[in-house]
Every structure is written in structure tokens, then in C-alpha cells.
Image (cartoon, rainbow, N blue to C red; front, side, top):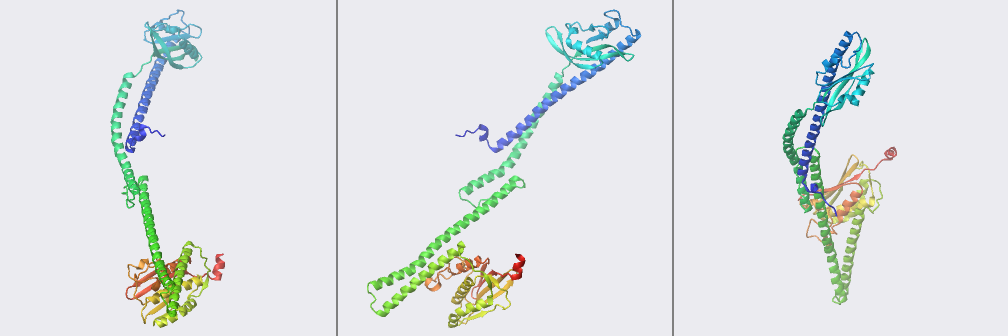
Length: 499
């Protein structure tokens, strides 16, 4: 079982505000600590510098007195110039190079600090020519205080004759630090208020597009695929996310609409197949029962009935064959035997097949393809099937004394071929659907009078298998023109140059 912390249950806007506020408060705390440390170090270094100047001043006084004495050490254990230095409220000690015990003076309030090991070590280092400074503890009653010291050697004619130790209590800037910290905290409260207002505005600007995306996603989850989000003004990641969401929604809506259209096509296909199968099956059943029940006694009528049954069976066979061919073409299972074809000769051969029926209907056939038309790369059998289907459709919709024309024109790497007629034309509402399976612009036509309804669908699948396209143009009352493209054949020299 997954356990969520209380912070994880907060909204993104609250998390952003708390994050900004935490960063601001953390910066203020670090600033306060850095300021306190810097002030403390500054005060310490300033006191050490001041103490060093005082030690240099006292060393110059001692060197001057020593020079007045002719470079001789005083015989008294507490010489007069030491007594004059003891008036300063600090710890002062002098050790001469020929004496193991220093002269030391300290305020009466301090307890035997002249024997401190730190003081002894500092004097010994100074006698060796080193200037040293630091801190050491001083004792006054039951209290231990921190004191700064500075120790430096004493010179006479370039030689060290002694060492000076000077110490003063270390001062801490507590009052100043308290004022600084108070100012920092006041500024921190003001900054925190500004950060909260700023973070609220920024969080609202950041989370509002996300809330819109969430609402849109929830609505799309419920099937409202037309929902879109308003693009923010900024072109940052949120702007790109909103744009990507809208593009994704467009794709999903298009896919859903395509699925719905395919579902509708499937239903129409089943309905059309059922209708086209029911009509011949009903006729076959009726004729068969009539023959079986000896309702038809006349031998001639019985023979005609048997022929009708055979025609209906043949129509069923054609319908099933067209459906199988359509499925094979769409699945890409039919292999095309591609070869260079002369369209003028191929059209002449095809027109010779349909010429007798057109002559009976007084329809003129015209091949306007020029002899210089470049050959195409196509399967001759499939292309003849395309032309026969288009010519048969044109013949059925062209009145007497009409005309059917086939023409072609080359364009770059393709050949445009068209079949036009002077028939009744196609209604604009039906024109976009004529290549759909089982679609019939004339609702009164049935399988017995108008084919299986798969002819133009098979034509489109064959043209697309060749890598071409097909479309129809029609003006009601003036005729129809169906155009398709085929790739031009590549000459041998061009094929060799490409290989």
C-alpha cells in the first residue's frame, strides 16, 4: 500500500509558494549567519590591529629607555619604566634575553595571569625574532574572559635584547550584531511578504494552463474530442505543451472520426452485401421451388427458368470474385506484372472490345491519345480491366448520339489519362463517394442493372497499386471526366545510369 505524505496532497500552486518562501527564508538565514561571522571577524581583526599598534608604541618606548641606559639591563626587578607601563589597564610583560623571568604587570582585578603558559610561549617566540598574536584566557574571580595579545621582539643596534607581550580584553560587538540581526529579520519579513505575493502571481500564471490542460484531458476522457485549450502568451515549455496537446487532440479527433467512418463503412458494406446477396438468392430460391413443385409445366418455360437460375448464380459468382479481388488489392497480395506499355495501342485494343455495344447505342468512341505519348510502366491486364470498367460506366450513362473520349497528357514523371463522356453527369453530393465500395449514385440501380457496386473501388485500388491517383470531375447535364495517373516507363539508358 502506497502512503502519501501530507506535502504530496497539496496543490501545485501551494507547493510552488512554499518552495519560493523556503528558498527566501533559507537565503535570509544564510545571510544573517554570514553577516554575523563577518562582523565578528572584522571586530577581531580591528582589535588585533589596534593592539599591534599599541604594542609597537610601547616597544619603541622601551627601546628608547634601553638606549638611554646605554644598552644595560636594569638591576631592579621592577624597573621604573616597567612601573610606568603598568598604569595601562592591560597585561604587559617584558622578558630580557639574559633573564628567564619576565617583568609582568597586570590589573589588580586579574588573578596571576602572568604565569599563563600562553604568555610564556609568546615571549619565547618573540625572543627568537617572531611576531605572534592570538587569544588567551584571563581569570577574574570565577569568570574566565577571552583576551587578545600581541608579542614582538625588542631591538637595540640590530640585536634582540628582549621581548614585549601586550594583552587587552577582547570586545564582542553584541549590541551591534543584535541591531544587524534585527534589521535582517525585519528585511526578511518584508522580503517574505513580497516573495509570497510574487510566488502567488507566478504560481497562478504557471498552474492556470496546467489546470486548463487537466480539464481538457478529463473532458476528452469522457469522449469530448473537440475540446481544445487556449494557448498561453508565453512560448515556454507550458506554451509548447499546450500546443502539443491541441495537436494531439486534433490527431485523436481525426483518428476517432476515421474510426467512426470506417465503422459506418463496415455497416454499409454489410448492408450492401446482404442486399446484393439477398436479391439473387431470393430469385434462385423462388425459381428452384417453382421447378421442384412442378408449378412450371411447359418445357420451354422450365428451360428459361433454369437459365435464369444460372444467370443469378453467375451474378453471385461475379460479386464474390469482385469482393475477393478488392480484398486482395487492398491487402497488397496481387503482384503486378509491370512493363512499358504504349497507351495508344492499348486503348485501341480496349475500344475494339466495347465498340459493338456502343454502336448499338449510337455512342461514338474516340481515342485522342497521340502516337508520340511516352509509354507507361504498368500491368497490361490490370490496366485493360480499369479501362473496360470506366468505359462500361460511361456507356451506361451516355445517351444516344453521345460521345466517349479517351485522352492522355504527360506531366513530369507521370502520364495523365482521362475518360470523358457526354452523359447526364454526377450530382455534386455523390461525386466524393463514387469510389467507395457498394456506393451507387443512382439509388434505383440494383445489382442486376448496375453491376456489383465494386467496379470503381477496384479501379481505384488498381491505380493506387501502380503508384498513381484517380479523381472524378463532373458537371450535371454535361458529362463526367475521370482522370488517373500512371508512372512513365524509364528508358534503358536512364535505368542503367540510375543503377
